[in-house]
Image (cartoon, rainbow, N blue to C red; front, side, top):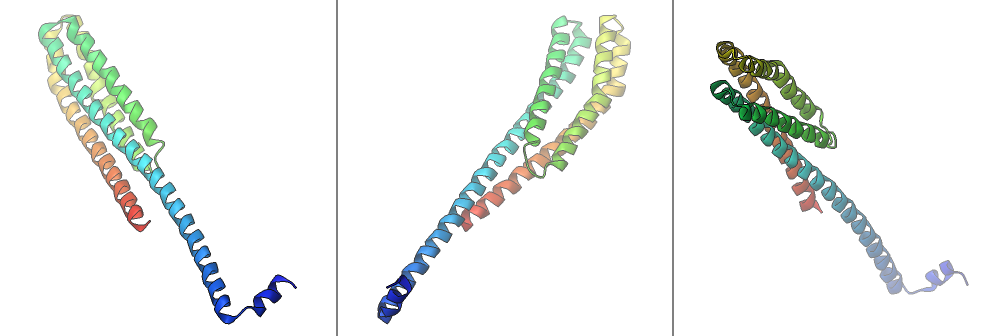
Length: 193
């Protein structure tokens, strides 16, 4: 006697019980698959949230170092102390290091085009409006041309720094919004799971 014949010979109550158990097993398997998929999604999104938040931290640190560059340039003009020139160059290196770390993390994030563009805008603003003048100021001070250094600082570096600060603020705003969107997406997925 084959399995199908045995099933036909069962009483209706047992057939219903068997069908109910079969549907429950299918439902449980489906739930387990959906639950597993949601956990994987949440894990991936949570990793992206951490990366986006770390990007924000690097941008904030780059901003602090960028401000230090300006302060140290002024201090070098006023004091001609090598300590301030070295501190300006160190702040420049640290700023670039934080921006490099930020872009490496951004490359790992999904839908990252606006963030990459904002990063490029910050670097372009710094390279265009600040760095050339900062370095020229350092050269002027080294050559004891303080009047030229002061003039370049006031006429070029101060307005240039405003452009860099605006680009950094926009970048920070985009990253914070991106991290918030990921957090909301993750929270919704967690509630659905």
